[in-house]
Length: 364
Image 1 (tube, rainbow, N blue to C red):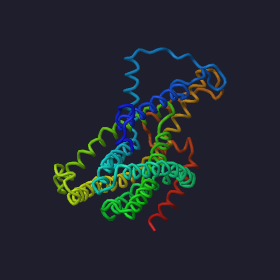
Image 2: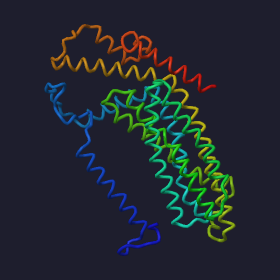
Image 3: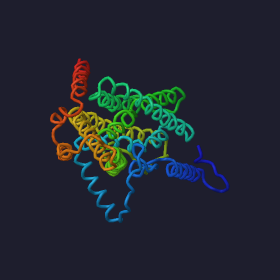
């Protein structure tokens, strides 16, 4: 909507970028003032007792610790699955950067395209909230599988919805067509946006100790962003060299623009459907890796808490060699069935029973 306006001699699209920059600065200041990093707790107490003072480390020591921490996270099987599905799952979202161009080639105005983009953005926001609620509900009933199945449904639903949007709706800018495009965009944004809030973020917090949560989020975004950035070039190459898009003829005639829109729609659907099939399939591996990694992280956190209490002189549980041997075995990556005897055996059995019940119903 700002594209065709000016303010004090500044182009509207420049104003939009400035607004985004201002909001980003404000958010950064709020995070700096109010957010608490588990690495550096705001209060210098632990369980009511004064915590040990943190020693200052050199930049080289900090870098070494970050590398060691990154290596330990990369070795977690569930994280490897997340990166694999995240690369394929982020690919369609990057490809959707062509959506505005596709809508305008059909014949919709700048204002209509802005409205469609807003509808999709609002729907994805609501979908994230809805997905988080459903993920929490299913995680309580089926701890080992509820979140994963929800993400597979979300990723899989993108395939038929994208087919309806890109290939099924009429390619004309009439009022009825606009209403149909807006409705499908809303439904699509509402359903395909569950993964992050319902599955990825909660599971990230469960498979590593609290102090490694910022690192696992950062590593995941690094891998996904780098590889998903190849999506727009792939869409451009597919539309031009495979589906007959003619960039030099843009605006020459409404008929040519619609032909280009059809070519771009086919390329977009290819860049959405194939990665989403891969993403939904890769989630299947998490049924095996997630329960084990979650229990291992719980054991590590519990043992580390006891060791911290011992160091502070606040523990009366004893400090025999068995605890340290168990801590070493957890770090060495022993199988979860050996840990179940020490922690959460009954809870693990109940979760497995619930998972088998859910998967049985899902197959039916």
